[in-house]
Image (cartoon, rainbow over all chains, first blue to last red):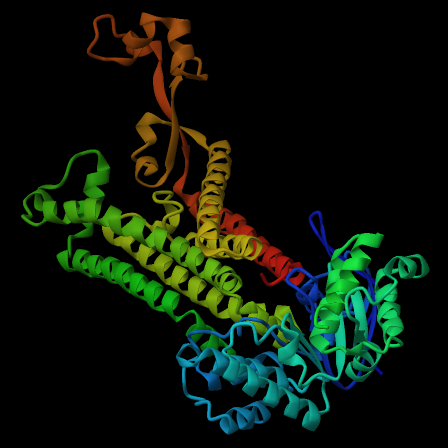
Length: 294
Length: 328
């Protein structure tokens, strides 16, 4: 079953297209790392999934439900963790769980409570007394307490220190394994999310640049030394940028001097290509970006 | 803990501040009311003051009667105004806090992502706020009505147009109107201060506009009453006087401007017994265009219904906006 399915999904804010004709299927299970620079459309995609935004064009289904037509159903299928924890400063952690229960009768407060106890987060503490990492954990515990099959995390690591980030990811990875949820974790720092993700979804300028499993991506991309590839020839062969780049690197794998690319290098390569216009020049840049570590 | 209790916790700053304000205003008005009642001025004093024959000797001789009148008129007016403003302010601040504060802080992202129904969330915060402002508005209205009676016990407040719009069921209607408007504006703007300013201006405009409409209706219902009958029918004491007119010898009622244009000096001679040439047979007289105080309940409910409809419209609009808007 597809956790998220989009077809020609587009979203425009005034004159800017945040998402442009995105066709995408995120299959159920595991963690998908949603990466891209600021303004790539990561938050917009997640907000469309949780019904916070309406598409300008195209369609979207979350766990089989269209958030535009059946927002209540779609929201019931989703647990959402925003970048800022959005907790009430007047409420304690325990009161947040009661608040969630009052809004969602099926909310599993005990599930959330047990997770927070394990992390030694005091339930009686006001939200404002918690550290940023603890607030993020409360936010995650509430999202997991919804028992929703899809978990959407909108850059929850952005404001956390390295230790809190690691702890957050550990809890997330464990929750995905034990609860069997499908998580989409947005981040602009690939290295951070790499240890927990199964799939890689790269967004750039509102378009999907790459969507593969991590295993596929790592197996298919190699870094070539600068000047080792016949770039102008490849441009003529593969005019589509993402496809060209993929093929470019696949072609590079035949060159003995190449080495396997890291996830960060793959993402950087696609983003470099995605930023540029479809001309010979940018493709050279993309090749250079991929060759940079050689 | 119920949803209402959680809503109260979330908005506890506003709840405490407005609770203190309400306690201060109601305490002030209530204290004044008890003080006025403690004077124990006989009803005859008030009746004689409206009789046109002057205050009876028993009242004029009371040393505390002037104190009573000063307190009832001067301090009493402040109390009446404070009571009328209280529900307006309560509705405005609570209405803005309910949605705009949450949008500004970003907490709606939590509420809207956990709760599948935004209407359920909004109902959970609107209902306690609405109960609070309507309840306090009703208490303020009752105290203001009681104060009106204490300020002049010879006049039945339910049959007097005096202080229409400053007492009774109009006060909870103010609360409902400002609450609904603040809710809708807060939901649209999502920022507390701009919402407070805009909602305040719109609420004030609604109150003034509604008052003007009801005044126009009352004016259309006014009837001419001869000057000689004004005291008898208690028109000055309980009615609303809109205009002073001239009754011509043939019984026609015309304005002063028209009468002067038509009759010139004859008019003055015909009206003033002290002027040379006064002719009692000339038949001129003065009359007033008056809406009787008995229309008070109708006028009061007109105000309350129009303002209540504005308030309910604001609440419905707020639900529609919340249903469609983004959290940030």
